[in-house]
Image 1 (cartoon, rainbow, N blue to C red):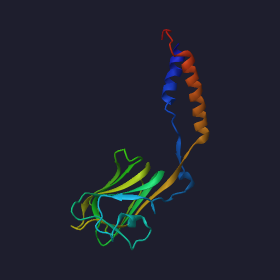
Image 2 (tube, helix red, strand yellow; image 1 turned 120 degrees about the vertical axis):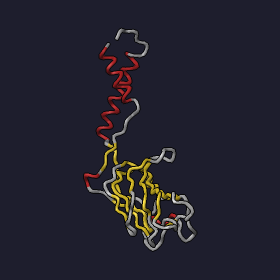
Image 3 (cartoon, rainbow, N blue to C red; image 1 turned 180 degrees about the vertical axis):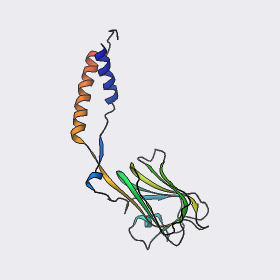
Image 4 (cartoon, one colour; image 1 turned 90 degrees about the vertical axis):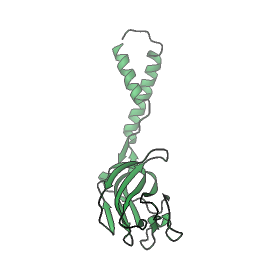
Length: 196
């Protein structure tokens, strides 16, 4: 009966149908994932500085937030999960953040998770935020302090990452084991009154 109990516990661990996600970082396939992707922001200063301009690949166009509140944000939907490795923020006109967070999530219903905070930033032209580690779809700049009273102004918000693939061989093994344990569980555990 102890064997049945052990197998039952393994079955319960696998019943969720875990997927094995594997980064392709080892193959050096990092590239910019944010260009042309859908974006959202807390505010836009005017029709001349809309949020789409921060991911259009053109540093002469910019997104600017309104100046009324220091807490402003900008996020991009990468369309699928990537192994996020770096974010590059190209500031414009000296309107940079002195205190900012890089945040991530995978669905719009999830809360944002901060994966990097930069305090006392003095770079007025560009921030290279390297060494990030997160498998995520949405990436957000969260500004919490400005260098001046004007709103934040970003020429380009660049997110870099590696594709994530499913390890299909290992997944097939897990699926096969899960199905076998499921059949065993139904045949031997349901309604069992054996002592443990």
